[in-house]
Image (cartoon, rainbow, N blue to C red; front, side, top):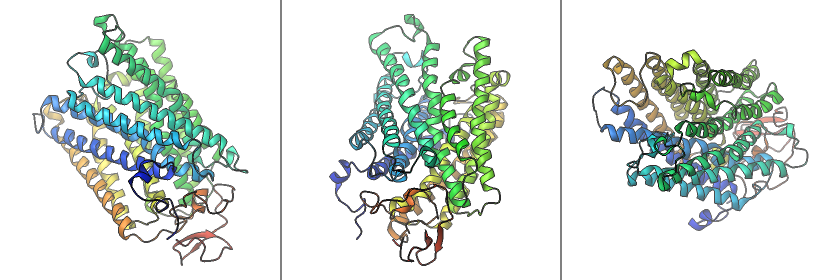
Length: 546
């Protein structure tokens, strides 16, 4: 048996105390997907309750707690840490040709801080529950009867340290561990996106940490910071919260944008059009993310001049995002496109994320936002960006790197079916919410006007289709671990460094020093049917066999 990171040492302690970035990445993957399952089940409860305008399966108080926990778990325990913590941890050092991240012990500490923060946040359910929404808006969250708020805020505060440490580790790794010959403009675009994300994590996360600490102090020591009864200002909380949370949107979406760059290059078998523009657009998105938080507050009473400035800056964010999409489309034009499952997720991403971006224009315009604010239009837009972009990008990356992580190939048939169900279920669930939101259906409401019932029922059916897709995905991925065929070193014909090592990788990632070159040069690859994968031209046919 080959000495790879899965077989190097076995047993619970060898994993619990590991410093291997690949194992830490897998532990993040299992833990964040577990959080996704819990949050997804809560979403199904919410959608089932909304099948009819009258009470259906839970009380109004339980409904408030269900959508709050759905949002908080999905944002803080899944979508923020999933791609950087799981796929980023696994792939980043191998893409650099490095043995590990710069600070392996800090990497393990980051994971355990995530576990601790997540445990405390979930325990808030037992201390009275949280029903404030995932934003914890004051003065609602400062009311004394909401006992779970302090525990939830403490959990998220600890999660912030995990995010900061991970971002710091990635910044130092990319700066210091690049091999000779890997200049900044030979970095794979996933690393550019991860680097921009790490900068946001380091610079923005302390703001939410301090904000939640102030909320805890106000709750426990009755200091007037946000509560108007104590002389505080609840709008100040919104400024603090969104100064972090809008950049945090790009923590959620920038790494999936990097994944899509890798998928389109690999499955179109051509160099990405406008490499430098795509690279710099990641940094530009990160920079703009710090300047647009006020578009969440158009109805809060801020000055007309400030609202106009935030609206203009919001439109400006669309420029670097559009640069990526147009460059991806230009890469696909006349490319030799191969429609394996990861590429299908990339195409799904282009459709759903584009809708999310375009509908953001309506919310960034002052006149239409007044009508659409706090309606289901916002819910639909948010999910088209976060799930239609972030989650679908994650699914594309998961299927792309699954053979490298596990050494096993999944069945393409069920995988393509699951992708189709994700596309159908997602759009059925959320597109109809644009319609009812534009007609005035408020979000977060337990009861609603019967005229909206048909929209809610369509949305609920879509959520069940989406759930079926995820359970099918779970089935064939787990099945591949037991019965999947052995993965070749390079099943997709990709040209970045992680495909130069075996599947799964050795304990130290590479048995020989990898060759650094253009990350998107496909001219030196040839398909070898004997191994069911790709190998360098001129190499012996046996090379690359698992």
